[in-house]
Length: 507
Image (cartoon, rainbow, N blue to C red; front, side, top):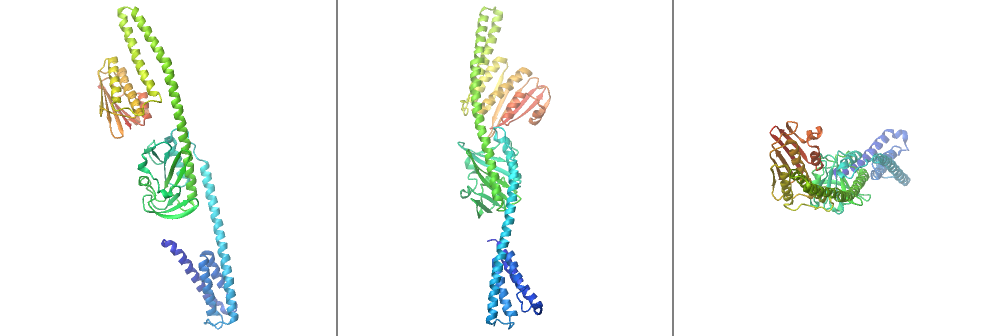
């Protein structure tokens, strides 16, 4: 038990003793005026400890008051040798005093309970008023609104920092969203890195502590309306490392699709009264996240259906039309003069090349595309692209990969192929270079793509970084948009002797 909790009862008993001493002294001073009503000042000496110190100090004050009356004021004075009548009067005094103390103590407790109920009601009303203004997430992307939701949650509970961790059904990841993070996307971790969020014994409990998150903290545990005390390290170290301020709290949420927790630090108050509020806010956070998760699932289904429709339309429409044009060109070439035949056949071959490119695009947008590129598949695809574009533009192209058998997730592999294709074609069209080189460097979590050419460069001169390119809408817009869509960065350096495009993508 803490020294503070021990000190309060001792002060109550000491106050009871002082009250009796004060009543005894006062009775000595006014004894000639009040005798034989010598108990006049002793009733307040019993009632006040009962109201402000509790029932125990009131009983002590009763016993001491009876002893003081018997010794100092009941004849013969300064002796406990009292007669039968005086003993009866002292017994009646004790009964009345105990009854008065009990009534006063009960009344004080009732008043305290009423004040606490009014405070709780006011607090609950304020919380409901704040929760009623809960922001609505729009869109299928969790990252778009998670930060807004957590910032609003922190405002409701008067915290300076809020973060949430959760797991989704059928997904082998733990997600972490931090209201103060500069990162746009939500962090994704293997389960072993963050679980369990709190000790298993407290999986369904709301936890509060005045200490810091990473310390051996004194924790208030609220579970199903029961409040208990516990001391120890109460959250995963990786989560605690993000909560640097004292006065922390955490509550769980469980929805149809998600299971997780919300963590707060820098709270203005971590008393037991805050547990229901923290719990309500955590449930609201979970409900919002679940709605976005379900929206994302539905959005994914819609995208797959749209991809199937688009692939079917391209295959049955554009591809068939191009095939007919090729046959018509071949027929015209057969009847044309020799000077025109070669040009017509060259046009037919260009259309055939675009048909192959379109078929690759159709395969890429189908929802049954590979989940991850095979080792070396990207290298083979880029080599085929290099040969085809080099022959089409009559310009040497070099593509180098580090490592040579580079493997990427299919979504990134497809995007990388399209980016490199667009960058090379842009250089050929606008800069008219004599050579183009492409270098890919894959690190632990970053892919770098560098495209160099010795052409005329861009309309501007010098180096322009990503933020300036986006803010001023400079550079190739389509290529820039592809990079931004993958949370990457692009920089362009343009000289009279050529240009250099640098792309960095997180992988």
